[in-house]
Amino acid sequence: MEAKSDIGIILMNLGSPDSTAVPDVKRYLNEFLMDKRVIDYPYLFRLLLIKGIIVPRRAPKSAEAYQSIWWPEGSPLIVLTKQLQNAVTHDLDMPVEIAMRYGNPSQEAAYENLLKKNPNLKEVVLLPLYPHYAMSSYETAVEHAKSVHKKKRYPFKLTVVPPYYKEPDYINALAESMRPYVSKDFDHLLFSYHGVPERHIHKGDITGKHCLKVADCCHVDSPAHDFCYRHQVHITAELVAEKLKIPREKWSVSFQSRLGREEWLKPYTATQLEELPKQGVKRLLVACPAFVSDCLETLEEIAVEGKHSFISSGGDSFTMIPCLNIHPLWVQAIVKWMGALQANN
Ligand SMILES: C=CC1=C(C)c2cc3[nH]c(cc4nc(cc5[nH]c(cc1n2)c(C)c5CCC(=O)O)C(CCC(=O)O)=C4C)c(C)c3C=C
Ligand SMILES: [Fe+2]
Ligand SMILES: [Fe+2]
Image (cartoon, rainbow, N blue to C red):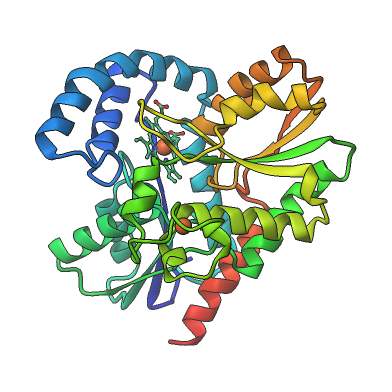
């Protein structure tokens, strides 16, 4: 049935290579890592570093990792984003498309598909599938969507959903998706977030004097928090732990997926997985709320590599809690947010 709404929705995620073949992985990594908001070095230096050194070295290893998690229908991240699209479409009388920041389906294809579904479209609402603001995730996705919208002079207005890291509906969905896991016995819950270079945190500090400069900066009020990934991920973890009534000493935050030699946000997940068994943690739960959909970084880096590291360091059991994916409360939250936008129009 053709949707009647004047509003269209785009669920925007990071993206994956088109296949696990090395040339496709190379093309994807080149596009991803040449993004000036991901690797923010001067253009010529970035070009030499990415195309000359990092991608040729990384692509074969990355392709192997992708092969180990690929599903018959394709990349888990893309398949899960499409499943979310279907679930949201089912409950909402609005056309819903998906777009990837890198690779396919592109932002332009998403806009065109929405226009095909409704040539009189008045507004497109972009929901970045990143709950937290980071220059290398939320910001680049939004800026890309805006620039395609402007370049193609589309007739509809573009509205962007702000980071929802502390929105009650999001926190409730995340906490309830984790509840079955924390209801069983465990020693420790690790919130492992995708890391970013500390330099990105300094760069995003609009006050120039708060983030990683003031003692306990994430808990001292500041306008910097609106753009601070570190602050936002800590708040998500605190709100979820509070909702699930997990005592403070039974959970912690760490950062994964470091690339290169720069200092990234600490503590590193890789270090924590080796240290926790030495501190008596034998049964570990790991949640990865930087990702809305399971992906390479959860299914391989955490569920396979991370588990191996924890167990071989003396841990007994390691459980990765799935991302929100298509959890009914998450679908319900999106439907509620989008429905409210429609009602206000
Ligand atoms: C400088 C490098 C990187 C930064 C900064 C970065 C930030 C960042 N990334 C995500 C989400 C995802 N990243 C994923 C894969 C991935 N990330 C990087 C590098 C940086 N990310 C690389 C090189 C890769 C590719 C895989 C690899 O070779 O390791 C993914 C998974 C994609 C998939 O297809 O499954 C996601 C999702 C966030 C949220 C973020 C900043 C907060
Ligand atoms: Fe990443
Ligand atoms: Fe901060």
